Length: 282
Ligand SMILES: [Fe+2]
Image (cartoon, rainbow, N blue to C red):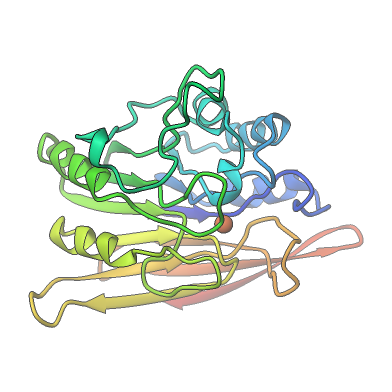
């Protein structure tokens, strides 16, 4: 199974000035089975930014594209609706018991807004069959509505765990915009809830973005056993943080002894983009 990981596309004012068609040509040169897009497609959750993200993602030749929300995608009261309209309209999971939800503003008050959907979170499952193997992608919304830090609600995680028992799969991977292992100034505040979930559900790996840095970690539970790896991919196409080195990651034969991880960094030049590949493992 070959995975292509992109993150933090940041259409809108944070988006770089380079030619995205050159990026798409390079992305499409990799024979991905699944594309993992770990959030922050927009800068300010504007409709035009969601539309630009949609246009970009539709040009990927791999049609198994899984996208999640980032904090920048949840600045608008219409974010949930726009995600459904432009990115993916799925069977999003709601908490089992909404009355004991701890995540704030998970529902927008109908008294203060006129919307089609008052629920702000986007959590869902996608199942793919790749070379006879059933791969479950667990999409967890770590973003707080109109905030840059993250929080996960255990009611949502419990509902996701229930839904997972109804699915037959060989391997599970998890997408979350915020890191669960290494934090920054806008962290996933209660990351332990999510690391516990990942270990309990025997999820093989997590994929995230958010910090615009490249970071690959492995954690093991010394008491109960179990381990997982976290892959944090830098930003594909933003210019909002000076340390940005735009990049994407590919994972060939993911999770097998023949695995090869390649980081492709992209440097805009006067007449295009210079690509520089680093192979991390193999
Ligand atoms: Fe982010």
